[in-house]
Image (tube, rainbow, N blue to C red):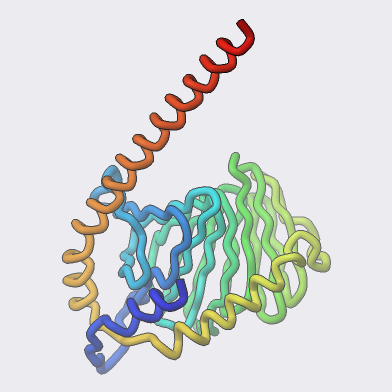
Length: 263
């Protein structure tokens, strides 16, 4: 996976820019297992995610079970999505980026943003980030959310009726409609320290191999790739259906043999 991520990043033609775009350059930098990307323009036609894939505002990334996806902003920030995550790039504006985690989990290293803002929204809470190492869990029913800060940074967590500020090695939980609990030492997120350290190593690798591409060039490359990636997703869907039919057929045959043995 590391090799292909590097290959995808290095083989994108580089075009220098005199100034940063007003929006982040968001790309898939690694994929494991089954991950689909749904565009805002055609939400009913998913594309198979692959390393080097350019993402746009409004894209929704859905990670299946036993799968994961990694996204980088400008090669300077990294978001690692865990299995069964449903994640949307609501806004990629540098002034006020907004991400949505409907359910699932993520860990992230976000570069220091200065006066800019980045928010991660779940059905139960909003985490406002200014540059930190943090994790977010969103319950599948949307009834609760959990936010933790690892070794550095500050995150403000807001529920419907109140807010709390987390600093290094603190976490909180929020029930939908309520306020965040008082910050307390990491418990839920403690086991993810190793994953956070691995993400930092990955970020160093991504940063070293990142190539800047103009916004116009990104759009053109995305259009070229999108049809191919949608076709790949459809082909995978056909294969999954065939595998499911074979599994059902094998199960029926096994049951018939068992019934024959009993007779």
